[in-house]
Length: 242
Ligand code: ADE
Image (tube, rainbow, N blue to C red; front, side):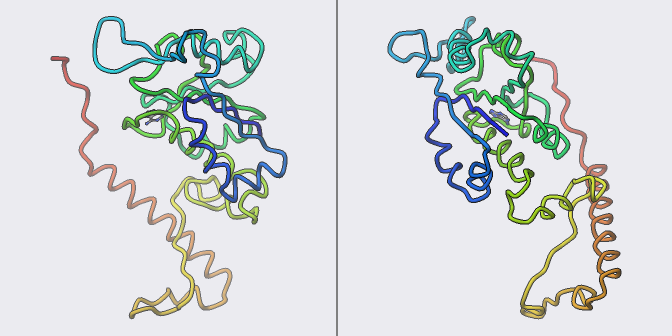
């Protein structure tokens, strides 16, 4: 897996690259590299953003800057690049990340993640340079860097060997192995703490019963979540604009 992250803050990823599961994947031949938009800007003084046409608060990441950075990295017109490689713009309104999207991305050989900053991207980045848009949730972060790290973390931990135990990522919350349900609860020593005992069945050594109990727990958590979703007020529909 080779991931390129385009960002104005490559130093944020130094910490991320040092984390154990990331180091393991990198040592096994994976790649996670950052490209600083500012290093490739065609504008003077390291400029990368500009005020929005039509007025309004904040600054917008310029399309010519993103174009130049992609071109410098890959040596071809980014408009062609996006047909050959997934170029993913991180933006709050994009496709929502979930376990199946992570599986889909983890199966790719290479990915490009574009981080926005300030008010986000000039819309032409999304329309003409990115192949898709991805969101880690319906809230707005100050930029795409933390979202990119979430995406990388979720992908890298699925790669063989990342967690030191290949089964760890198989039977986990929302995985096909649990039919998309949340994972069952885990316990470790002490078996009784302040009168909070570990369920008896887990201490029984009876593997079939343990398996049955775990699947039951997982299923009832899924049902509880479904009930919660039903009881929740429907997400506010965007109202008429003022
Ligand atoms: N950039 C800012 N907020 C974001 C979000 N929620 N998801 C992805 N990218 C973002």
